[in-house]
Length: 178
Length: 225
Image (cartoon, rainbow over all chains, first blue to last red; front, side, top):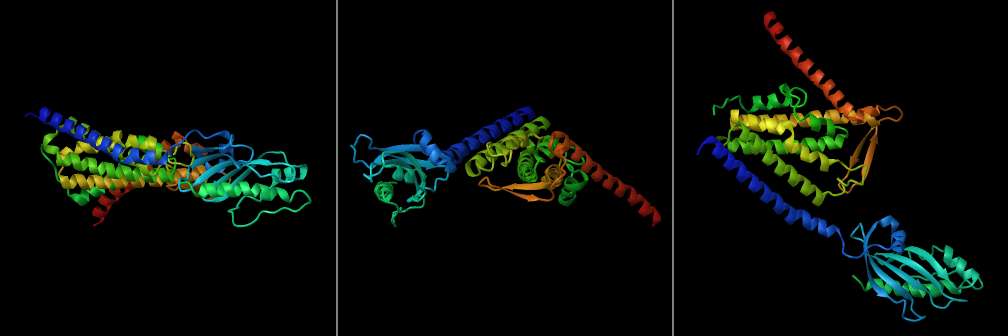
């Protein structure tokens, strides 16, 4: 075989080997690594994106829709939230409290690794004192179900306990999920 | 093909200092200008070029009896293209935050690494490998690679320091830490391509001047004896 023939053959073999190795590394290493980083789930809703803004949520899966379960439902909706940091187990719940002094409070909580990390007031039919407390409170942030959240005042003292029942239900539900 | 022999150490020193790829031969200038905007980028690109150059020259040297001049260039290009593509794939797999396009502190390696495969340094050294023994080729590749790395690191350090007054390091998780040398005045124009060419020219001038001075001193010393 002449020089041009040998050169062409060697270059073709090298090119085939190079493409083979590259494809092998892509499907053997890169593609699985990319797939592991992209969690399954649907698009993040605006409420969840706002609540978990600091954690950059990448996807959600709804597992609970209790909005039609009657007036006693404590958990109106529940979502598994996939965060950029995949080591954190996160959940979103829209909760509705038990009957307080004059009505019920609807609120969102974000749970990270079995602790309430975020709280957001939605609406309330409580009396003015209770509604104001629920609108401004940060007492549920850091709550893990191991103590009692209290507030002092003639009518407002019934609001935290009523809300805490819903938060406890959410924490219990989250602990039972992967 | 007739091969010349210089020896490993002589080839190594030749590539490292006397015929430094950036400062004497002006090979790989595109990479030198683009990668030296940041010290860390220059370090990473220099190290990757060293590895890719060494492996490409080794592959061409081992197959030299099957290759002609054009074939050696194509062969070196195929090997270096494969290696740089593998590097990009591994970066995407294991260090995505380091190269994240949305992070302004991340390194621009996704753009720069493919340039290594077509840089004149790898192609020329690959072609030249046909004319020398394996020992010489490995010495020259190692010397040239380290010489390229050192030139990039020095230029990158000076360029980033003068352009920003600080040196920024980005970790694998994408977080950045900055060492600030001074605050106030900076020569931000050095961050532009002009800065790269300017500093390459300055350092090349210093390097060539030192070599010329040594060349002139040697005969004078011999005459004095």
